[in-house]
Length: 294
Ligand SMILES: CCCCCCCCC/C=C/C(=O)SCCNC(=O)CCNC(=O)[C@H](O)C(C)(C)COP(=O)(O)OP(=O)(O)OC[C@H]1O[C@@H](n2cnc3c(N)ncnc32)[C@H](O)[C@@H]1OP(=O)(O)O
Ligand SMILES: NC(=O)C1=CN([C@@H]2O[C@H](COP(=O)(O)OP(=O)(O)OC[C@H]3O[C@@H](n4cnc5c(N)ncnc54)[C@H](OP(=O)(O)O)[C@@H]3O)[C@@H](O)[C@H]2O)C=CC1
Image (cartoon, protein in one colour):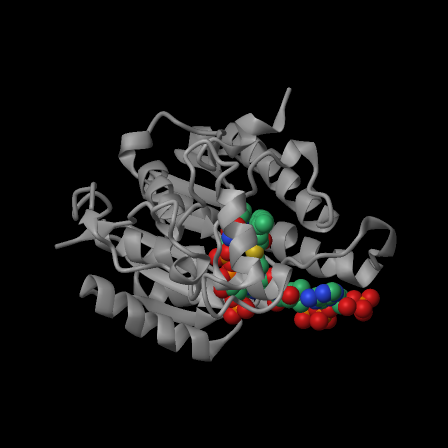
């Protein structure tokens, strides 16, 4: 049976939610919803990107995943096949490198055909106080999150247009208009992505291309632990794990997000079910932004 993300119970420790989990509720979309569509997912080997690759595959799309690491991509290919019973294709690509992105476009076209869905999920992040932010640190994040998103999307513009139902999904961050203290580089990049999305939606709507942004709240992936908070917890008793459990209590829905929560929104917005939705930023955060005050 095909299935999509289960809400983690409020009592579940973060160790249980570090990577996309076995799905345990019926997959809510038809397995032919995205049949004949080709999708590209950047950063698709881990965390939220891997869950998106699985969900798009479950919905019938032919999916190509990218990241910088060939090793992680090979592992992800096997994982998607294990979970969905269907193959995905992969190519190493650094979204900051124009030549890599051009190779990616050619690879997708040759293997699967014109891409109808582009998911900009690759990102970099690490904690750095604003007054200590070096130019290199700022550029490392802006180049990955913002330039990478722009570069990949632009490379696939002709393909998206040629399908007559192109869809660009870019992953932002919830409540970014309030800033992102400690992560001003990522906050700036993600805010700019929401604006890019709106510009693309206006300019490319007449070409049949929709562009939307999904803005997740906290999802305790391995990437978040390693790049933002230190090593992943070894058990739910770790101090970091306890902090996460407490954090979950601030969320109106009383849990942190799962990669599948984000993936379900991607499938919906990629599909014809959302055929008249463009230029929006959809917040997927259990209502956390509502607790931040006026
Ligand atoms: C309670 C719960 C709430 C939980 C609340 C949770 C909210 C989560 C919101 C969002 C989460 C995410 O985005 S999660 C996504 C996380 N995933 C990732 O980041 C994976 C990919 N990351 C990476 O590859 C790297 O971290 C990346 C930054 C890109 C490194 O790229 P490069 O190799 O090109 O960069 P480098 O040459 O190594 O470094 C460039 C500069 O950046 C600095 N730099 C690089 N990594 C650094 C680091 N870890 N810490 C400090 N500084 C760093 C270097 O010092 C350099 O500056 P100089 O020293 O001046 O030379
Ligand atoms: N987890 C969370 O709480 C939240 C996450 N987000 C966003 O969700 C998305 C996924 O994050 P998450 O799954 O948590 O973290 P991950 O670290 O698992 O995902 C980031 C991915 O981006 C890839 N990547 C990084 N730099 C590049 C690059 N230059 N070129 C190509 N790929 C690259 C990484 O692969 P590799 O290193 O192999 O290149 C990795 O697969 C990101 O956009 C993130 O900002 C937003 C809000 C909250």
